[in-house]
Length: 343
Image (cartoon, rainbow, N blue to C red; front, side, top):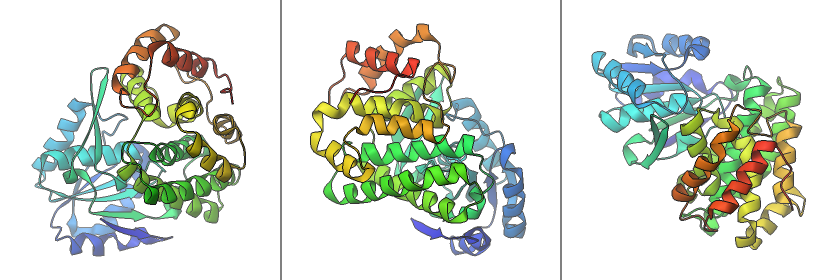
């Protein structure tokens, strides 16, 4: 796919759409993104056919079908997504069903715009898959669009990106080249996220964080996911928890569980993070940027731990350290209470 990166890059959207042969573009953006959706619609001019705004987390199947129906109704040949991973997810759901082009304009650090991975939630079960159909044809990264992203969203979203980098180091598609990308992403995010959350108007920090998020998406696309993301998908499907916040809470605990199986990778992460205690450092970073550090804090019910542990064992069977129910339950209990992971 094509990537356009830089402050003001969004102003090129009409040119990018025409290069794809766009005649009728459907803008997919939640009501939270009304301002950017209106700006993109104005920039697209007569190429803009309409908008779908019923965007929610985890892409419920029923709402995905509504988005597909809206694209059909408007005879859209291009989907323009504006927002975080949820908007991108709805665009992917449409592309999975219809023959359309996709232009993604990310306003968070989700990273899914760089991958062939999609996710749909049916009831309390979130199912992910891969298809080349869903990977956006053009991604426009404009750090100016992240300036209004509050720290309460930017921090957890950045932890999601950081988790993509970490898991790419030992996911099913891990390789030496993608490890270089992933470690550079870890470095960029570790240094930029505290600045983004402490000084929201710092465009340089926002640019560095978006650069890290782009690298994280590239790493995720190749490296794939492991225990951390499998856990977040289970918890998200079961309890509807905020995805970014889950990443902030779970990452350090998942790395602690995997650490005995990946000593060389822990050493590499330690060099980038400047610590020998990688799980603890990831937990501390969440606290430093004001992100949640316990599952209790973000609304998970305590009586759901046992069933969640069983599901995680099933979903993460191919993890670098095979999951056992007792170990995963202990991991979830520690994450639920917000205890700092043991070194």
